Image (tube, rainbow, N blue to C red; front, side, top):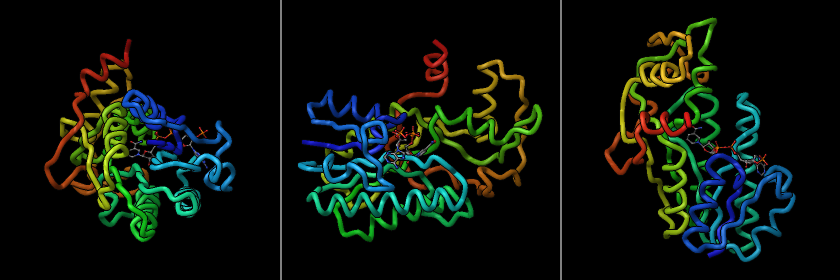
Length: 249
Ligand SMILES: NC(=O)c1ccc[n+]([C@@H]2O[C@H](COP(=O)([O-])OP(=O)(O)OC[C@H]3O[C@@H](n4cnc5c(N)ncnc54)[C@H](OP(=O)(O)O)[C@@H]3O)[C@@H](O)[C@H]2O)c1
């Protein structure tokens, strides 16, 4: 199959390209670097010609509330229209566990808007819901830092390795459309503050992690289960300790 990965040069996209290619698909990476821009529409028609499946793993350059909403709505609208013109038979998007539940967080609201456009498009689709990537935990700590203290809510947290997310996305892209969602959380559930604290401690980061139930995560208040799946299902294989060891090499 010809599978076009929009955002195919990013963290997840580049790993998805590798997996699809290993499985014998014609995997084509599309992003600014390859002359494709989902906001302006530049290069979309050309790269989608003859495509069977499109995977959308783009991300917004800005997480500011209006910018991120504009990015995901404009990008998704343009992409779905171009896919319709090209006769693409399956749209696969990567989103976040918990996005379907009401949220005051701007990024979650933008991802929910992206998902609604996909569901309402009438096109065959699959949405992969990942939890927070291990690779993102350092950035989470940085945004929650004041001086030498990282303050996070002590809610449930089940992060996942980008490698496991990429495998789930590639598997979904090679399959038939779900016209629904599939979750890919990590294999271990812990407390948000404690798991971020483990990452910092492993890296000899001197910052202290403090739990505060009212501490926001990217501007939004978190409930106990906001960030984790509410139903049991398959998980990624990589545990945090193994990932930390491997990423330190
Ligand atoms: N971080 C997490 O913990 C987490 C958890 C669950 C889900 N997700 C979702 O995972 C997805 C992928 O994240 P990631 O970390 O892999 O992103 P990333 O590394 O930042 O990569 C983003 C990709 O999108 C491309 N891109 C951005 N704007 C574009 C545009 N207008 N036109 C074409 N390509 C564009 C970039 O290309 P250039 O580099 O050429 O600009 C890059 O290839 C996101 O949608 C995010 O919501 C993330």
